[in-house]
Image 1 (cartoon, one colour):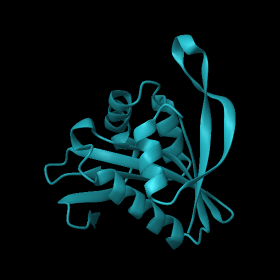
Image 2: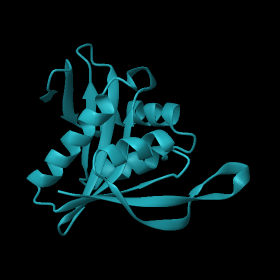
Image 3: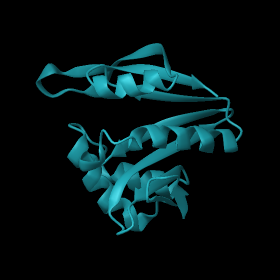
Length: 155
């Protein structure tokens, strides 16, 4: 377990025992959440998956990274609703960059919905730049599909 500096929160590798709680958080913060099976597969596949918990063990957030060659792919990151707008997302992005650097990565890629304006703002403030779009990448209910903005952070 690793302390997230000056927060009272701890990071720990995500395990199969965390999946139900992580999935519940995912469902609470995203209108089109990953499936439970996506988390099971990510943990089982050995992706770099981490949880963030407070001193009482309550889940505050998580992230999942995948590495390929010299590039990290940020698959998913979330902060619990009651923890949002307190700087935890920013701290997680620093942690994610540190993990990627520690694995010898040169950059981090991610996809984000154009409608997720808060996330876009946070990513841009942290140096991520738009490098492309994936047409119709996300489900979008009655609207059909929504593009993904592909962003990269050079480390």
